[in-house]
Each structure stands twice: as C-alpha cells, then as structure tokens.
Amino acid sequence: MSTPMRLALPMRLTVPMRLALPMLLVLAALPLLLGAADVEAFPAQSGFPSPLAGPASRGFGFSRVALDEITTADTGDALYALKLGAVFPLVRIDEWRLCFDAGFLGLFDVDRSYDNLGWDGNYGVVVTHPLGRSAAVRFAWLHDSSHVGDEYAERTGRTRIGYTREEYALGVTWWPAPAWRVYGEYGHGTGYDADTPGEPGRAQAGIEWERDGRWAPYAAVDVQAWEERDWNADVAVQGGLAFRADGRRWRLGLEYYDGRVPLGEFYAEDLRHLSLGIHVDLLGDVGARRRAGRPADPPANR
Image (cartoon, rainbow, N blue to C red; front, side, top):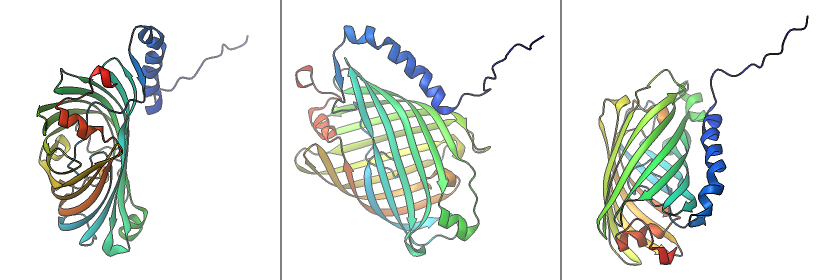
C-alpha cells in the first residue's frame, strides 16, 4: 500500500512571509477601495515627518562626532556618523497614506583608521492619516537588524549578539502653531533573534521649532526611552540653519546627545557627544506643511 504524501509546513513564518500575508489581503481589496476613492501614486508627502533630532532618526546626513564619553571598549575620541534613509510615500487613498520606511546608520572610528564600529539597517511599513488640519497619526511595523563592524570585531574579538528587533508602533504628531511641532510614539517589540535584550517597550517624544523662509533657523529636542535600558532617557538636542530648495531641505546642525550607543549591538553601552552635521531631507514638503500648520495639503493642491 502506498503511503499518502504529507506536506511539511514550516513551524515559524519568516519575516518576509509575515509581512506578505497582510499585503496580499490589501492588494486583494484594492479593486473595491480604488473604485470609490481618491487615489494618488507616490504622493509628495508621507503625512508624518521624521524627527529632526536624534542620531537614529530617518534622513540623509554626515556628522563629525566629538566624544565626551563612550563605554564601548577600544574606541577613539571621535567618530563619523553616516545616515541614509527616509519614509517614502507609495500611495494615497483619500486621506490614508501607505509608506515604506528605510534607513541605515553607521559609525566609523576616526582614530582607528576609520574602522566601522557597527551599523544598523532598518525597514518597515508605515500608514499615516491626518487628524483634522493640525495633527496626524501613524501606524507602523518596523524592523531593525544590527551588526558589529568587521574591523572592530577583528581588532577586539567582539562577537555579534544577534540584535534584531521587530515592533509595532503608534505615533501622534500635532502642530499647535505653524512653526511648532510636538510628537510622541510608543513601540512594542514582538520578535527578537537574540536571547537578550528582549524587553518590548520603547517610548519617544519630542518638540521642534522651525522659522519660515528659504533660509531659517530651527531647533529640536528628541527623547527616547527603552524598556531594555530600564527606561533611562536618551536625549538629543539639535539646532542649526535650514535651507529649502527644489523640494529638499538642507540642514547644518549642531547636536548634543546623551544616551545609549544608537546601534542595537551596543544597546547596553553609553554615549555622550557633541556633533556637527550636514543633513538632507528629500521630502522638503515637510517645511511647507509646518508653515501652513497642517499635516497635509488641502484637496485642491493634491
């Protein structure tokens, strides 16, 4: 008698598969949604700006970091920080916007032949929606994978702990006046590849001020706290000059930071520094939206 064939199913869905299932459901419902909706592909705005301050915020930037204190072993007195990424809007359906989050942060030791200390790669899916004309909300699924630099690992013998974090996040932002923005977000981790840390909570809040004009000063404060760090605050304060042109915003900013090393592999270690950096925000509509005091353009300008 022949033995019936059995299919071997994986016990645990991979990250891409878990992401693919809800995306397939959304795609299946699109014909019904699009028939009665105002749809725009690749809108100019994400609807929820990324924070200006903080070493791990989204954006493109290059900074010279002067270290006041760092507990990571065998590091010099200065670092270069390279930051790449943005929240890219993919589609707008009425007031809902679907975006793709992508980011990279790398630290390089100036006093050790520019050896890479480590780097983090981020990606995720973000959905935003305005709350009236002066606020917005965002829902996000975010993934962070952290790595130790090859040169640093070879020099020190440090091995990777396998820090990989997935979280669901809910954030709210509000423009109380055209030049001011406040925001807050809570993220709850749902999966880790490392045995530690594993604690799920992350809280973030901040306030920003930016004057109107082609050339304008700005200032921002960002505070984050992680349950894996016993809710100790990571504080970033940045100020400088912004220049807007051709849908982009260029910023020259001086930043003070006191908190954890902003790489997951070094989450338990402390860093305090002063940095000078050049930053580029590709989605320059953020400034126009702030000057108007609203999270999204009016219907006539879409």
